Image (cartoon, rainbow, N blue to C red; front, side, top):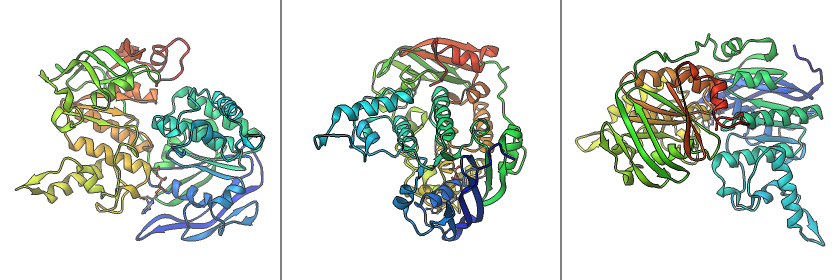
Length: 501
Ligand SMILES: Nc1ncnc2c1ncn2[C@@H]1O[C@H](COP(=O)(O)OP(=O)(O)OP(=O)(O)O)[C@@H](O)[C@H]1O
C-alpha cells in the first residue's frame, strides 16, 4: 500500500464511455486520495485519456458518476469543474496562439495599474514563472510562433501554476529533455507537499516509480489493478501488469560490420547547421544527440526538406539528391517521422487504412489498388498492434499512441532508403516500443539507413550503432561501440548539460 493516507478526494463510480460500437472504458470505480500522486497506467488505447477527460468534464460519460470531496459533480461542465480546482493538461499543446507568451501565462488575472493593463508587471510575472521552470522564451512572442514542443512546455507551466486541488497531467513528459523532466517532477513534488493532488499518465515506468504513490491500471478499457504501489514493484512487474504479459526488452546487436555507405552528406549548411559531413551506412542506425538548437534536430529537418539548405550535397547510393525536392520524400528516398504528429503528421479525418497510404497510393490500371491498401493495413496492424475498431475508423479518433503507430506505418510503406525518426516511440506503450525497435532493426537488415533522434537516452543506447553529438550547429563528437552509454551521451553534449535534446 502507499505512504500517504488522505481521505478520498475523487471517487469515480461505474464510469464508462462507449463510442458507437466500441467501448473506450467499461464501468470503472477508482478512488484518488487527497494529497496523493495517482498514476493511470495502460497500453495505447486502454482508456486513460478518456477517463481523465470524463473527470475534467471535457468528455461526457455514457454511464456512472464522478464525486469530488463527496459531492456528485457529474452534471457540472468543464468550466464549473475548473472552478472547483480540477485541471487537466491534455496530450496536445493548449495555448492561445495569438496571445503573447506573457498573456498566456497571466490570463485571466491580468495585472492592472490605474485600470489599465500593467505590461511591465505582466512581463515580470511571466518571466519569473518561466525562470522557475528554467525556460527562456521571449515573453512578447505570440505563443503560436513557438515551436510545438515549446508550446507544450508553456501549457505545462500554465496548468501547474493554476494551483488546482486536483491536477491531471496526460503524458506531460513527451518531448521534454531529461533536465526538464527533473524540473517538472521537482515542481510536482513541491505542489504535492503543499497539498495538491495529482493524476499522472505516462508510458515510462521510471517516471511512474519516481513520482506516483499509487496507481490504477487499465487494459483495453477495463480496470485490472487498483491502488498498486509502483515503488514496491520492479519496472518489469509494472510492464507486465500494464500489458498482461512479460515485456522483453530489445537491444540491438552492435557487433556487426558496417555496410557500405548509403547516405553521404557533404559540407551541408542550412538553417541552424554549418559544414556538416556525415555518412550513414547501409543498415546503420546513427543517433543524433544535442541540446535544443545544437543542430541535431535542425539537420534532421533540413534532410526532410523542412529547413532551407544553403549549400552542400547529399548522395544516396551514390546518386545526388535534388535538394529542391527533398520534401517529396518518395522521390528522394528519404522519409521523416515528425515529432509533432498533430501539427505536421496529418492525422486528419482519413480512415486508418487511407492514412497509411496518404501521398503514396498503390495503383493498378490507374486506379487505387484497394487490395494492396488492405494488405498494407493488415501488415502494420498486426506488427504494430493498432488498437482500432477497423480499417475505416478515422485516424483522428485513435488514441495518441495509436496515431503514432499509424504514422510510422505510413513511413515504412514508402520503403525509404533513409528513414529519419524524430522520437519514433513518442507516446507509444512499453510493449509496442519494443516491437517498433525490433521492426526498425529488422529493416536495417534489409539495408535501410536510419537517423534517430530520441529524448530518451536509454532508447538511443539500445538502438544506435553510432552517436553523433552536435554543438553550436556543428558535429562535436562521435561515440561508437562500448563508448555508447547514457553517461557518455549526456557528457558529450556540454559541460553542465543533463539533457539530450
Ligand atoms: N471520438 C472517438 N470516437 C471513437 N473512438 C474513440 C474516440 N476517442 C477515443 N476513442 C477510442 O477510445 C479508446 C481509448 O482511447 P484513449 O485515448 O482513452 O486511450 P489512451 O489510454 O489514452 O491511449 P494512449 O496511451 O495511446 O494515449 C481507443 O480505442 C480510441 O480509439
